[in-house]
Length: 309
Image (cartoon, rainbow, N blue to C red):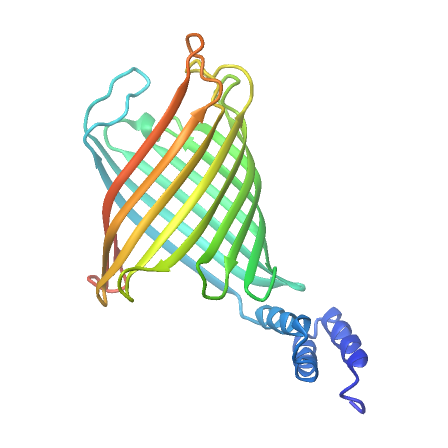
């Protein structure tokens, strides 16, 4: 207190205060250091980090309900298909942010259920969990390294375990305005419960998100390129081939604001998938090209506090 301009004393006091859990005192000290040395980025990063730690815990829950009609449903296990399919779905998402010790952590949980009205074996339940700290990579970028686990179950009658997977995720988020807004990199192992070798795999995925203004100031175009490598184990799965492939994809969405509560725009997605060891009946090559073209509309406040997509 007698020498408030002494940088070394301020640094020592801030570090000791933070170790003792006195975050407010440490924050005030780093703010003083930022005034004394305005060109020092380290003090600004510490100020932002401690302000985040002082934020109250936040927990949000979202529910998404959906319905789908497919005029040409896939084949089932008995090779019966080419018929209309009717599905109802529900998603529950829990997102929690809170400070623990000297870091702030984010936990995300998701429960997804798809109910097939005609075929119980086509039902799907997915439970997923992610947990990791929120870190500042720079003044503009936040990174969340996280562990993730996912469990899938099929058939509402048998509740058969389908897959479970575990791995790591690195999520990057741009906190400032800019063309490059977000990126994800994940590496995980997926185990098919009732499968022969050729399906279980180490999977790598990565994607980036780019957002730019459209033709009008209120328009927005989003580009999302992605890459996947499925390193399936050697051997053949129950369908007769090894499921190893790499995939390159691109999603494009253009959104224009018609009114304060209504947005509409075209969507386009494409991916190319090359199976590197597709040999169900000999030396057979397989390349997939998948195109999706559509139109999306989002209306809010037609029903209060409800968004319709």
